[in-house]
Image (cartoon, rainbow, N blue to C red; front, side):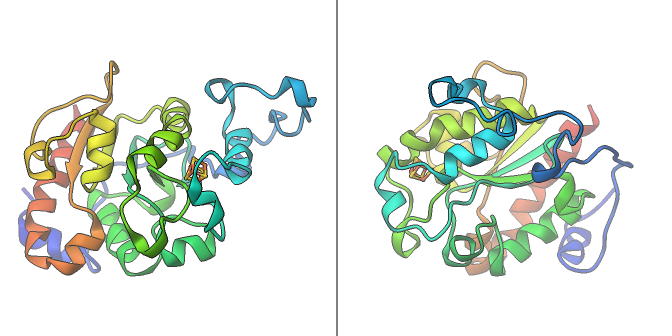
Length: 235
Ligand code: SF4
């Protein structure tokens, strides 16, 4: 059985594999033989509702979105990255400076640690999916406001419907509270078996990698959470 030390080693050194995985799909290459809704070029009055959008149209809708004030200060929207067939979906709170500049989730130091956590689970980054509660950067890396998270929540809900993961890993308080529709603290939400809304999708709450960088002593607790993800995937 793996130990906490092995996990810490895995944060940059050791890799274990749960099992072989096939069929990873890059968002931009999803279903190459099937025309996407975007390629069908819908007439203006035929744009589907968010709840009916495919991944490419949803991404385009996010890129054009002005539903909240974060649209005014963003450089790029950060839709998400990874496999649309992922079993594990990581959801953080919002893009930071680097993510805003690159249009990609979890790049920079926190992203490096998240990659190590994913590796510790036995996956590559392109075998899971990574996104955030809000798709535009909150100024000065503040937490997203309730109305911003709420304005963006339909996009996230649709992403979850499209990916249909087995397990969602909520990274940090903002993500955990939104996904579980709760005002309980992160400490109170961690370690409990819980489901996403009225689905069979398990939600595992853990610390945000940026917090772990500030408080590396909590990495062992995040190992407990990742161990839970492994158990859920093996059931
Ligand atoms: S954060 Fe979400 S709701 Fe707000 S502008 Fe960006 S994409 Fe739209």
